[in-house]
Length: 499
Ligand SMILES: *Cc1c(COP(=O)(O)O)cnc(C)c1O
Image (cartoon, rainbow, N blue to C red):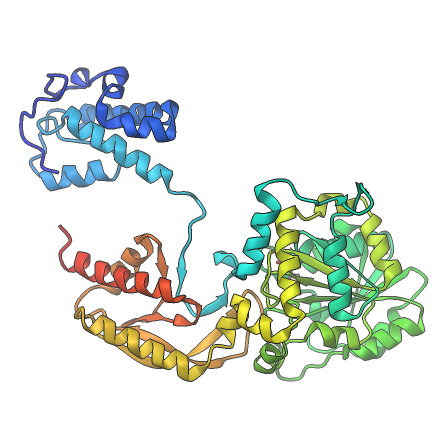
């Protein structure tokens, strides 16, 4: 946009002082806003006009006697939605442009699709596990119109909202009972409230962990009304530490998986099956906060330290809680499986109403779990598994092809060996050999390239080192790969020639 000195605006005014600014209604009548009024409605457009006029007024008050000779500066200010202009350069035309740009910016939703090339497969800040297409279809089916969420179609009466997911969980894990809540934090809270309120729960000091987002075991325990009985030391807890803490007021033993950290050196903790044996000898349940909900055998052989749901069951734990959106690769949910009497108590607890899942979650979870009934299908359809189990040779080849495509645009890139990061507070120490696309910034600043990539639509997120930008393609779809190349070409062009 070129702004000319003494530009006469559409309403026949030169805007030099605040009082020259057009009225809200006058700008609103401009035909360039018709489209916006039709698609967004009158009120948001009127608010945008007011906002731009306020900004322009303020600019004129502050800079009224200082004509700004730099047209490019004004252009950028207007583009930034500030609606500012030097007194010799401001016109109704530029105000309308600023209004349209402000409306454009505001129309961008808060939650946007991003391209995750960071190499972290489960990124809590990026929404953890992407859903399988079957899960997406189920979400759509359940929410587009009405759904039999709590309605028994055979009996023509009220049904139970989690019954189909529960049946599926029982089938998948050969267990007595299951239920589902909003997330695993809620599952643990519910277990402690429903089974241990007012009584003691014995936990190893080495497991008093904080998971991300301030989920701290001691604090959850306190909120639940259960009394924390810490045993052992930070680095070692023995079976007899638990045993000597068991008394009349003991409600349960609690095992918490150290999801996001590992201890090394002189350490020791009691294996789960010994713990369940001890609990059962005293007529107590063992509650196991497993964290991740790893089911896939293939993924388990990559993440050797990460316990599977099956292993947790074999260990004899009576109630097991895990997330739906970590290594299971489904929607955010807290899955509770175990003994029928205990799970039943939890399901009947008043907190269950506060923690219950919505129909979209239940539909997505049902579809994801259904895929696990056929492990080969799960491996092919669940994005988390596809990314984590990506064939190394295929990834290398794809990365090399992308590097070659970038070279055609004059961007230097190589395929380098790197490491896959599980992320999402799972398997913190596991490194799986991987390949990354290392893009050479040439003479351009890495920081601005990275910023430009983040400002792209859709935003592209990568890793940076002091001298390269790193892209991991295992979490990038073929379609996203094309966008990633566009984004890079665009970032290099703009950075090399900013105006
Ligand atoms: C992740 C995690 C939680 C919290 O699960 P959310 O589903 O994120 O609420 C609780 N306990 C452990 C051990 C975890 O790893």
